[in-house]
Image (cartoon, rainbow, N blue to C red; front, side, top):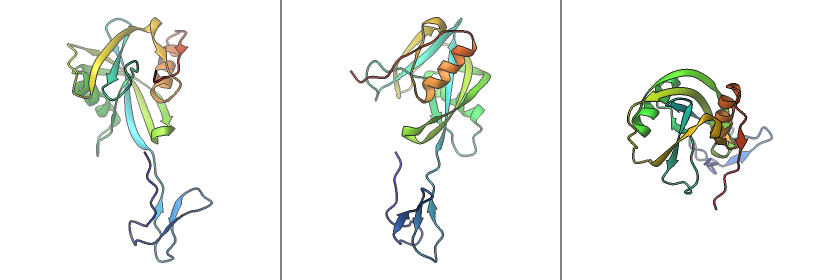
Length: 171
């Protein structure tokens, strides 16, 4: 979640939201602007087996929510390396990148998602972030209307599948 500064982290003067939509230091001696740039995240549409996608359940999510394997880029890390690292860390699988699907915004979390099609094999070993996975045939996958759901929708649509989109509900 974004945090808007009340005071400048450089000179401690008051911050003010200006017409350009950014939070500026009011001191004429300081040029600090709080841009709140989005955080880069990778997402893997993991093809596991023949025309099946692996979806993971994060322990912190409501029971019925499953999603793509995602992760934050580390300092100096290339997104290609990051997505394969995240697949290995979160589900224990060795993967190969088949294609770059696209980039997507996730406004609620102020993220830019770089989505990849990754083929993976091996035995699934969950890290402590996930508590369950589902393996779903491409023709049975339901997507969601935000962030990684759009990437999964684009991936399947580009393969010729008609995709049902559902809303996340907490019930």
